[in-house]
Image 1 (cartoon, helix red, strand yellow):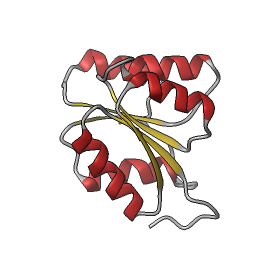
Image 2 (spheres, one colour):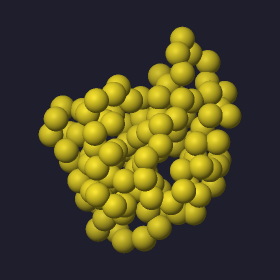
Image 3 (tube, helix red, strand yellow):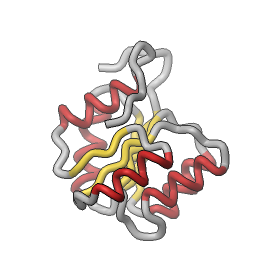
Image 4 (tube, one colour):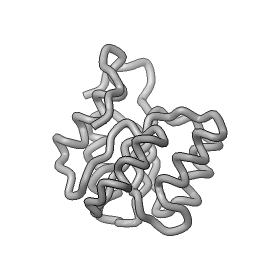
Length: 132
């Protein structure tokens, strides 16, 4: 459970309703405020208009893919930590996302424990944002 002055805000962007519902439930149970979207265009707009503490983005989704959203955010000077997720185990996609600044790249299916470990590592003030 997170103990802070305010609830950290996490964007979950994934076109799978099952994934967004599961991630939202797990994160809210651990004290995070969660915003969800099912497409990359909306994820881009949310990141440009709101202060987010973290984003969890599917690599492949309608509108814009996760890497495009990440690149646009970085070009706009937005350095929100990003956990990229994908069901496609393609090393080049992973490498490209890490080069663009993704902190973690996790392959689906992702357990609740794996998700929380990555989130807590990035949001823990004593932790580091090492890439995985």
